[in-house]
Image (cartoon, rainbow, N blue to C red):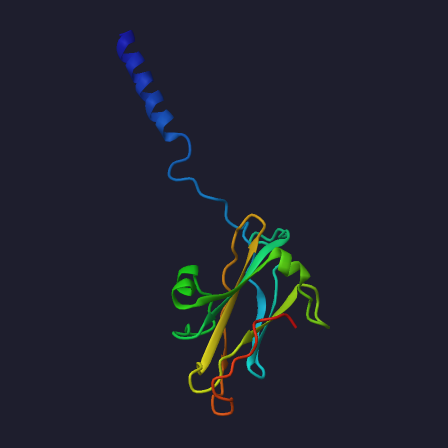
Length: 178
């Protein structure tokens, strides 16, 4: 009689023991990556596109973000994305190209746009004008924190290039800060 009772208890312990604990792959807690940049805008100037945005100060969880490690600027010069929705990393990396990665050292030395609050940055993207240049460009930006966590891409902003008034085949200088 003691034997079936011991077997029952042992069976219950095995079943109960296998049901305890966390199952499946470990997941990184969500919300530690920086929020996406805000107020991304693109304005066409003379042979340059002036990009302006506000860097995030909070993580997705709402907690403050420490110093940013890098800012990436991406351009869609063909196969522009539809609408003003945020794009996944895969969508951007397949259809766009990385224009510039601004490291923390460069980022810290960037001047803020005069008259704007701290955290507002600007970048000048050179435009190839004339018949060989694109008729439309779209841009998106993402940031990385000190631990390498990437924000989502900002919804792309687009500019129309008027190729009729542009001088053929000219290019503005390299991207620079204002």
